[in-house]
Image (cartoon, rainbow, N blue to C red):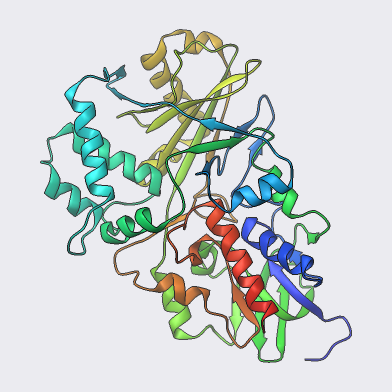
Length: 411
C-alpha cells in the first residue's frame, strides 16, 4: 500500500492505554491519529460532575509508586489519600471490629490472596480453607470477587497470588481531587483524536493496514496500535483480514473479562458516621462515602456475578435496593434525604462489555501472546496485555501503551 494520505500510526481507542501510546509517539516526533468510538476520551474512566464529583469507572491510584503518578505530577494534579479501616455488615448491621468474625474474614482473605500450592480456582481454595457454613468464607469470597470483578470458579488462585506479589500496586490508595478524567485529558494534550469513530474492520499485512470505520470511511496506516478492551475482540467488534493467527485468537479467547457495577446515591447531607469502606452481605457488596459537603454521596460497588445480578434489576430497581440497604445500615433518614441515584453497569456498556480482566483457569501465557506485534503492522496494548501483575489497573494500561509505542518506534 502506498497512498498519499496514508497515516504513520493509527491508535484504536482513546482510553489511557491508547492515549499513553499516542503521547509517547507524539513526544518522539511522530504524528499518531487516535480513533475513539465513544463521544469522549477516557474509556473506562468516567467522572460524573452532575451533582458532585464521583467516579463511575476507575477511581483510585493504587499505590505510591505506580506509573499514573508520572501523568498526575506532570499535569499538576492533586491527590488525597484514601485511608481508614474496612467495616463489615451482616443483615444490615455493622459488625463490631472486635468481633472474632472480623479477624477470621481478614485471615481468610489474606490466606486466599497469597495462596501457594497446586493450581486451583479461588472457589476451590476457599473451600479448602473454610467450611461452606462459615460466614467468614462468604465475606472473603465476596471481597475477592469485588476486587477482581471475577467469577471465583474461574479465578486462578495461583496466578492471583503471583500478581499480588509482583504488581506495583499496594494498599495505599489515592483519589485525584480534580477528577480521574483529568488523567486521560492530560495525556491527550496536543494529540489528534477523532471521537465517534468506531473501527469495524482492519485489513493488514507487512506493508501496512486499511481501517474501515462503521460509517464506511477507510483510513490507511503504516502501523496500528489496537487498545480496545479484549471483550470487544472476543465479541468480534473488529474483524481482521487476514484473520488473526490461531495463537493470537486463542489468547484472546482465554482472557476473562470481569464485571462491576457502581451505584451512586446522592443525599442532601451526610447522615452516616465516618468510615472508609463497608463490606456487606447485601445485594450491594460494598459502600464508601464520596461526593462533597454540598452533595454528599455513597458509592455502592459490586463485582463478579453479583454485579450482573444487581444490574439485572435495572437502574430504578438497583437504586431502590441500594436505598433499602443504606437505610438498614445507617438509618431511615436515607429516604428523606435522598436526592438522586445513578447506576453504571460496565457489562452493558457497548464499548467495554465488562469492567477489567482477571486471570482465569487455563489462561496460561495468553496476555503475553495478545501483546505480540504482527508483521510490524499490528500492535496491541491495554490492561489485558499486561504481563507484570498490574492488569486491571489504570497504571497497568498506561505501561502497556508505553510498551506498544516503544515497539513501533523500534520497528
